[in-house]
Image (cartoon, rainbow, N blue to C red; front, side, top):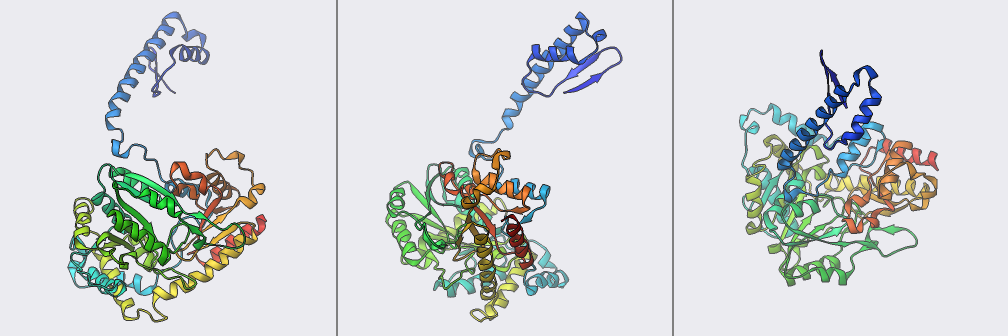
Length: 479
């Protein structure tokens, strides 16, 4: 409450939307000197309260006009907003967010320096809306060899503001009101709200661990075949596939992909393949692009990311590729929202790809050297999590690791954390009390299935070795 006194009388103002007049009057009587509380004074207070109650109600009614539109209702701040704020407040060792904290390759960052000094002034102006020509040409050359077919750089590839926008343009460009979209859980948290924003109906199916004893691999997380088949029907427009998978690290094998492809062909369903971690595979796992399977090119849109490929997530350059008749829909969304992406960044990514194309498949190629480096960090993280009493899932790809923290549940008192899900309680408790931040995986599940993620925590291992050492020390001290 804010009280303001004027020379001849005092006035009470409140910003509460609902006022209990009798209770407020009683409170005012207790709060102010008797000399002020004459019968006339009390009536004045009451009049003021009634007046501001009416004003507040009218203001509230007016503001309802500017509430979230129906397509956005139910949206809430993402887990990232909440946990970034938590990190800023408590300053923990942050192994939650998925970005490298070490330097990107020098030739990648140097490309921006060179572009800044380049005599060509057009490198700092708008470029082609659907993608900087030098970049789409480099991507066409790369993926022609990987998918075994020619890609027209001007019609089969769209450059986007990160893979995030590629996903958004794909969903908004292809999903209509009432269309069903199959989402594999756990999923990157924007999948569901984007589908709903387009008027689509999300249908969920979770990956579940089939193994209960001994070391667990991401390959041990599988889909129930009957459940998967049961989701496909005449209303199904799309299935979103993420391989290598975030947060589990699963690399879908050929048999699994062939089954998904079979159902897509049977029901004429579009497959959106989120492959931003395409180069980050370990232990001989093979990343198979589902668009290369029989009958799948014409029904697949594949998404990629320069941020994940070159460890520059802040550049926010992504892409989608596929047949022109599918990419056209994305172009319509892109041209009427983002329109074009920053020219210097696209030029820098193009130059970086050109360098890697010259040494593709050779040991010094960054697409091979980065996963070699990450495998060591993955193994190091798996060991210190195991030593702390948790049960990690060893990822075949990506740079995240899920760990089952339930074996150490008796070491934590979560009563101070009011969140509904246990993984939120655990990760916040660890942030505040042990200085180590992870991400709660239940954020990557639909409401009915959030319980499936509550016993886990997600950590990121694309971090400096010194920071992974610190994490190991923090957990060792806790143990």
